[in-house]
Length: 442
Image (cartoon, rainbow, N blue to C red; front, side):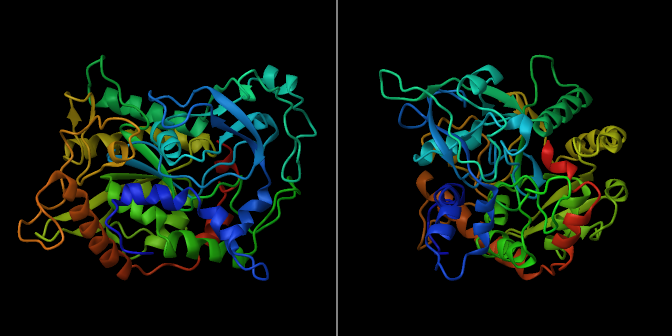
């Protein structure tokens, strides 16, 4: 990867959006790239907006046109890049794989601004057709991935669009995030006129950017059509996406959340396995039960700024809300208490001016530079270090501040990765954890 002066949060948009297509279409035919594995999951009903450019409102329900079946694009971090709480997953869910979600609609934008807008404002829902519309366009049992090539019979209107109406498809896992924020708002005794929101106070991201319905190298006897990856593919995907391109880590070091939420034993195993060596407190171990980890204080250390100030995040492990609901019900009050304690200790505070939790350290120009909307937190955005007037690479102008942060982010990330001692069995045990299968369906 070239060392550019493009701010990290913007640079990732231009790298992640075309990534899987480039790995598949521009790799030697005789040696398929490991990431070609995700194409084995088949194609899905996809859409684009009818109008060019970023939508004018913070809404993913726009005037849509049906494009037909297509492979799914990789995903960015969802929500505000400076939200203080970040939930971590292994890789995104795959809408449309399971019988009950065949009417799902998946974004296939050719506009970077629309791609960025979608992941900034998606919040707790994705899009789908109503059951009535799906059936009226011919959808049914024959529309079954991964081998289906069936396209919906959507008529063309007078404007030349195969226009469709989208409905919000609320995601159970994202709704669980919102319920957790509601609990936190109550614990913090926030005024009733204010509420914490997914996408504003909590963002979510994945260690691997491409979607699948399950992360496994083992065939599923209950779903024989499910395409298990080979061990070589798994290791190659992790090496490409997590280790080489560092999509998750670069996003993490630009966002610098003060609290990380890790749900499920499977995600905990992969997360701890990759980041062993970065924990300054708690010393979590691969396969250590999340119930035990929830009782510990675990801190991930980002590193130190040039002035010596240390940056870190508390890591809260918990059972998966949709994959392990019984254990989650018992753990939920403990997670709320930990979040409340984090607020009391100053990891984040409520800002009455914005009506949301305080933003994290560092600059962000995601919304403004990509022209997808104004920054709602402009008064809180501050560089990690003050730019030096004598610096040969920067000036004290506002436009130079992202460049200053990018250099600091890169220095911190390089020092961070240098001290990592990944546990090789982290990803293997992520597959074999008891909640590995169920946790992807939420």
